Image: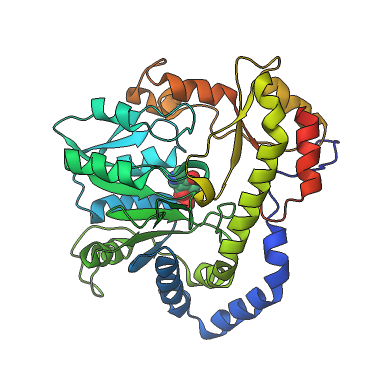
Length: 374
Ligand SMILES: *Cc1c(COP(=O)(O)O)cnc(C)c1O
């Protein structure tokens, strides 16, 4: 173990849980007494509440965000061999899920300022087999709904949102997950809304997609022992749903805390821009919910990213890199591209650094982080 005391952790989940700890314990105890563990009441309640909060009719809870994408694509009618556009700059799960659905991920480079999928680059990746685009609302910032819908309409593509980092984010009057044909969320503990393990959800306004998803997550069975599809075993546990029900009412406040912290970072970091330290751009004003607060250490800087990260670690400040190696340069995914194919993504991977960000991060801590960077 490191002997350096942590001054500013990267995340602190206990700050969220401590105030509602006894409520959580009481609720879990009740479920244990009733033995209501799988496809129970708390799950139905959470599916309804989370879909409604996102401005959508139906929610289907699944075991994790990856399954929400993989099964969700199948529920949307994606067939084996269909090509699906995904950003080169994303967490690997987006690519895994496409492969699990037996579709073909086609990587697209990102916008160098926002790190989000570049729709101009996406145009050139379209073939006669392209069926869908998965915008990833990365770091908590949505890809522009109007631009996406225009793009998808012109090319007759399905929009399937990967909103795993964007619970209740907003842009152009849309909430994350509300404008695509369907959308996937993750409730991994460190996401903006997280449970006590793994969890995920598909949301959609389409009753047929929701019904098909309910079948797919439950052994492909529309009713007991009738297996209409092959499907999977992928349900959001009732215990996890109960925790999420108790946390959901706090989500908007927690997102606001993150936005406030990001604004304070922005203000304090402004003088460092001429020195080559530049926050990833926010093009969606107040709707960015800052799952992560990411800066770029550009070529203009006198220090490189790895050196800066090391210095911060020595000062007790934890940071992260999201993500250090792009999908197409990972050993298992080299068929998705060659070095140099997605230059903006590759540059970002070498230059980005995620600073501490969580609800409850104090202004004093933010000042400590920025002072250490300066
Ligand atoms: C977390 C995440 C996922 C996967 O969610 P899991 O619950 O970990 O399976 C997918 N896409 C993105 C962008 C994510 O951040």
